[in-house]
Length: 389
Image 1 (tube, rainbow, N blue to C red):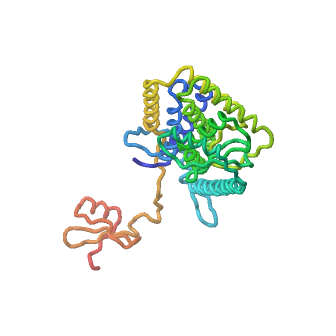
Image 2 (image 1 turned 90 degrees about the vertical axis):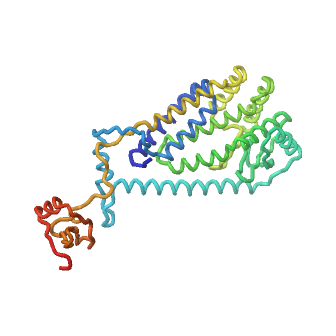
């Protein structure tokens, strides 16, 4: 397994291509209808891992292309720019811009996140026994017990879940019916069970790292929607059609409560019951939940088919690699560093062997008793000196 510039380029191409195809298939709900949301999430994770592990495997077939690629490689790896008296390869300049952009994006996002978190925590929170009792009843439905708190916050108008270590469900200061409160808390608690906030955090860091690739932003947006769909399906699993209708009505009612003055905290890693700025995504969630109720759960065959498709895509992405017809030299040897008769000579060790001594570094580079090599070097002008001379 090797890491090269070309293997990285192939990782970018494959990941970007699959993300675009996923976006198109999700909009038409083709992939979800055929294989379910789990396969879609697995493909999203594959795109992420494919970019983070851009390696060339032993079975990877190299496809050499000279048209355009050779010229590009020469520009990146052989041409240089003089900066403050230093000749810096263009590839190193791009690498510096990438690293600087990643650090800048991460620092800016962390600053915005801390500002948003401080803004939420500075608000006076109300603790309701009714909210706690509802949360306790919901927690009993899950095998994995989590330490989650619930409180009211006047600075928000949409229910949300925040925190990785200190998990908290924040509710607006609206009066919800018992049914609405149950489904809202159940939705956010399910997000915690699915570890969705950790996923969102990792994807945000991934976006900061590959800030220069606009397709990565599309991945983040689509993954957020896929997590919401998965949560909806988890909540409505086992519910009757009337209960599912109540759950969807809860989302509609909460959207109506949220109308008015609303300002979402900047860059807060959290899960929300809905995104009021995108009605099309909410409609998509409703359609998928309704379809799951009418058609039932996906069969085991569908899941196996999804795994098979995913495996084939993985193998295909590593099966071949496009690169130039020549390998960019890592260290180009200049004439000044080349061993020539003017700086290198043969040393007769007086035991039938000869050593090749270079004045460039003052070291013996080889020791041989092959007369053909010795005579050939003498014919090229290399001098012979006796040991100790």
